[in-house]
Length: 110
Length: 116
Image 1 (cartoon, each protein chain N blue to C red):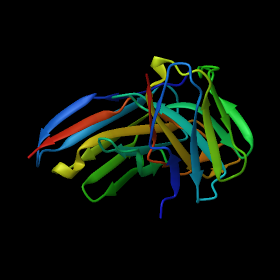
Image 2 (image 1 turned 45 degrees about the horizontal axis):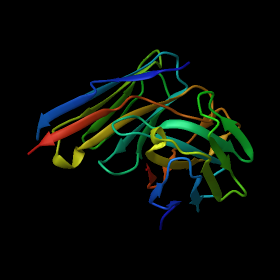
Image 3 (image 1 turned 120 degrees about the horizontal axis):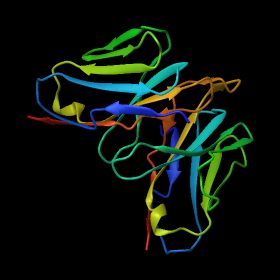
Image 4 (image 1 turned 180 degrees about the vertical axis):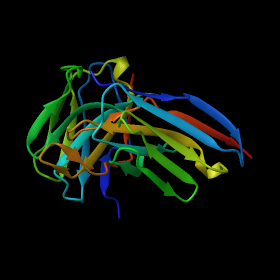
């Protein structure tokens, strides 16, 4: 079945440093979504990418969808303590359901 | 202005004692999902409803059942909870188009289930 892996599993950074998480699917995706889950919270939608090679930015966050639509990345510039949480990618393969990636837990030290 | 509501937020049950978790939505979305999330893991889809059409994941145990009496409500029934069923249960909703794609999923706050 379809699998979506993320690396790294954990990342500890000093506040102000950059952070990147990578997402890889075993199959070609129709689109990919990114979610953030704060400690003790529930996943919250960040963005959806649909087109091959698409790049979208939200303030300090940059999202990219690979040309082959099998991988994606999230880059945070100059992390802040409010960025702490687990970031999940979630892929779709022409269905009405998402397959969540394994997640990357980000810890930011002040 | 809660959009996806889950009750209760915390549920304690005994080994083997049936439990029902509830989810309601004010978004009028046609799809409702139930996920199980264990500590430090990704949400795992148990099943979902596309309108009234129930879709079970292949690896969801028979112990887990669901009901969707109307668009707004969906229930998760665990018939005989085991220790391994202790987890956070997340409900989510979305608007899907002819079952080939879906928009943003809106998650409820979750119900944390403890099995004694």
